[in-house]
Length: 344
Ligand code: UD1
Image 1 (cartoon, rainbow, N blue to C red):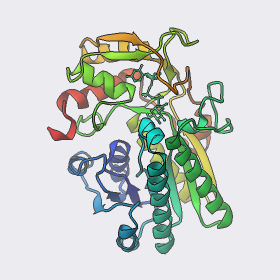
Image 2 (cartoon, rainbow, N blue to C red):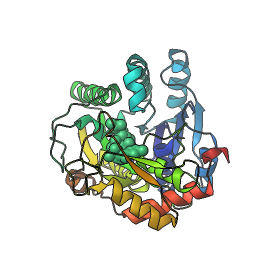
Image 3 (cartoon, helix red, strand yellow):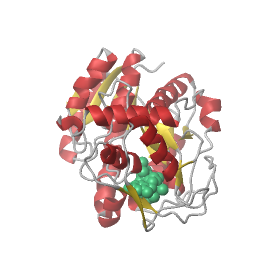
Image 4 (cartoon, rainbow, N blue to C red):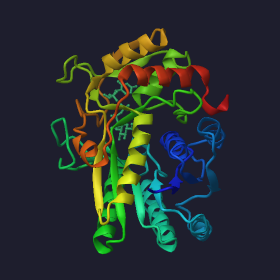
């Protein structure tokens, strides 16, 4: 069983939940984070929740000047492998500044690979995204679905997956899981860690939560004329704690398999939920009004995508267990107890 894990981006929304899951399972974590879109406070709270802390290396994986320091620290930690979440992730920004996205997300991965080579720990669980499927597939989509991301952010995810696949083909010592996340929402039930987006949120749940808490006046529903059951967009929301458990299941799988090569898994709940259904559920959980209005469709959006998560269930023994009501209750607890995120 893998016990000593590098977590790049470990102070971020998903990374902090992955750390809690790893530490609770008795593992050790070395977080590598530059706090570009995260707070050191998350690490203190991880310690409170998990009863044990993660080690921290404050460094920028994409900065060549930090590479030697990162490689030394990774070697000294004697890891079994890594969960790789560090990277830029804003879709709109990636359309405006594509080269920045390529020049951060790819080099960060090169440095991690070099460090793991040096530490003789050739195992990576990579944070990929359902965004690699673009709008090419009918749902539910499985891992054999056609890929074709519609923006540079999604392309960096796909290119890194392909690079890791090549790495595993070239050298059978490498063990890789590419995890394609659907839409992570919710927070640890303690309400101590959660999503704290920079500026006005782009994604549905953080936006709803900020409307519910009174930080934003009203939600725009981007289109009610999609060919879905109520006309609004349908997505596969997955509780971030379920998602975090999927990483530990993937690490266990890689550790126990002799020569898994590179594998790819959808991590989703396998259920489509519309924007109107999400709003109704959040309203129930928070007991607050969510003022909303219908707005035009958002450029680049698709009508519907949700996962067929069977492969992860079969090979990783993992499936999402938390409900939409759990997601809303936990997201609301984090938002209402930390209305300004980690700034409070
Ligand atoms: C988006 C990204 C995806 C990224 C994911 C992270 C795009 C095209 N895709 O996915 O690459 O991995 O976030 O979770 O941006 N909605 C509203 N009002 C809002 C915000 C969203 O109606 O203010 C609707 C959207 O139209 C969509 C649904 O809510 O139907 C979910 O949107 P969002 O949370 O942004 O996720 P995705 O678009 O699925």
